[in-house]
Structure formats: structure tokens, C-alpha cells
Length: 366
Image 1 (cartoon, one colour):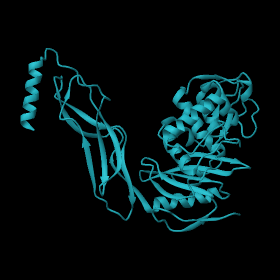
Image 2: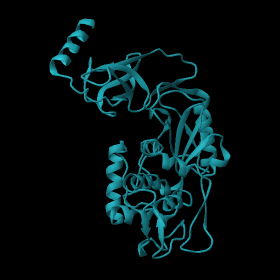
Image 3: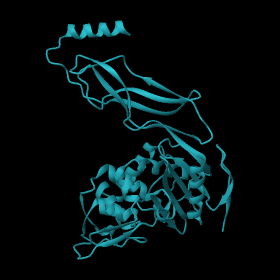
Image 4: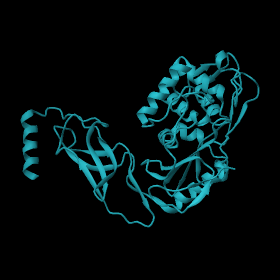
């Protein structure tokens, strides 16, 4: 067995040897690298491709939409959910077949339904990868079968997985160990079983995807959550990937913790509203504000908030009104746009001069 002794380049972890040619560990919410070795080398990704297939599908189709299986999706080589020509099946059931059984046929069916063709769908995948920041990744198929020009890096794949795990439906599917789905009007169902053994082997594991081809070797992306910290580990070309991931996740949970300043949608403060039925509106974060630190550290942080002195009615819940950031030692470690948490309608009969008086009073107070 080919072994690589991995050396952390940034923050030290206790040294150990494992089998992966390339690896990375990220904290999900901040995307902070907790460990990496050769994480930026472009390599094959096998069926971990299907993480992005699911992302694009979920962002362009509703789970209850019906798909008619075409001839290109029937009999695709490799792993399958046993689709049949002309079968009518929901997007959700196809996603379960894609992510549990690793169905190559499900990948083609979804690609043709969402993109119109496999080629057009792969263009959508590549645009999404660019938007996520996975700029060393390129897709030429939706299932991960070995093909020239189809590659990623461990770091990019980690970014894609972190992004995918923000989707509630995706999280639910990849954390499912077994699923029964209807089978083309038969009296019995398909029985799907998740290939990700870490769900059964590792405490706190909640996803995400396995992969293997002869040319790329074993690829594995896993996610686990303990004490409120979610960690994503990626290995590429790892003959002993299950043990690799146990060691990587154990080390991350042993050495790091997440400091949560505000949850997603967390209340920051209230600011005055001029001319409204209410005098003030709450302000909330767009995303959670958090940072990762060593368990041995007790870092002091500062919250930097940029907000106007007041808002003017009408104000709608979700209106962008400012910006917030968390700083540690003067460096930004987390940031979020700030939004109105309340809708404030214009008060009836409120005139310009009255609003002006409110503004003058506000200025005098401040």
C-alpha cells in the first residue's frame, strides 16, 4: 500500500501517516483549513462529482417535480439505481438514488432534465464551481466516470461540499443510511443503501459521498458534527480512506473548537426608523458569524458593524442595510451582510415635516 506521511503546512496537528495522495480538512461554516496535504493538486474525483450534480439540481428543480427517464439514462455503466426507459420518477427520488446508491443513471437523468442535455448541465456545474470558488475544478460529466478534462482538487471539493451542506434537503439525503423509493409502478420498492460507511462507523458523521474508479482510485468526502462544530474531510486516491477519515476527523475535533458570535439570522441590534408605524427595526445577520480556534486558545474578538444612523419607512424584512465583521488580532475572521429583521410600514398621515422633526430629534440625541 502506498503511504504518504502528511505534514501540516499551517497549523500543527499531531503527526501521523495515512494513505491519501491528497487531503484537506475544513471547518464547514468558515471554510477554514484545519489540515491540508497536497490539497491543490488536480486529480480525478470519481463519484464525489455527484455532490455538485445534486447542488445544481437542487438550485434549479423542486424535489417533487416529475422526470421521465430517457434512453441515455438507462444502462449507464457502473453503479446504478436501476432506472428504466420511460419511467416517471421524482427529482427527490433521483437524488436519493444519486447520493445513496451513487447511481450513474440517476446523474444522467437529472442532468438531461435540468440542463436539457448532459453537456449543458456540465456547463452549469462549471459555472457553479467558479461561483463557489472551486476554480481548479472542471466537470465533463455529472457522474464522475473517468474522462479527460474531468478533475478537481481536495481543497475545491471541500469547498463544494461545504456549500452543499448549507442546503437542508442535501443534508437530509446524505445523512440517510437507507431509503425505499417507488419502482415504476411495481408492487415493491427499490431499496437504496448509502455507500458511505462512515455514517455507521463514526460518531457524529452526517454525510457526504464516496467515489471510486480504477483510474482515480478511492475518493471520499465526509462531514461530521460534534459540540456544534461541523468538519468536512476530503481524501483523493486513498486506498485506506475509512481509516484516513477517522484519524483526520478525530484530530480536528480534538484540537479545534468553533466560537459562534452570531447564528445565521442572529439579532445584532435595533436602529430607529423614521416615518414608520414602529419606531425601530431589528437588524440580523445574513449568515452565521463564527470563527475557529485551537482549544488551547482564548482569543479576544471585536465585532465591527457598519450601519446607518437610521432607516426611513417603508422598510421590508430582508432589506440589506449594512455589514458586520468579526476581527481577531485586527484580522477579519468572519463577515456578513446585515439585513432588516422587521417590516416597518409607513405610518398613515405622517408628513414630511413630522419626519424631519424626528430626524432632528435623533441628531440632537446622538
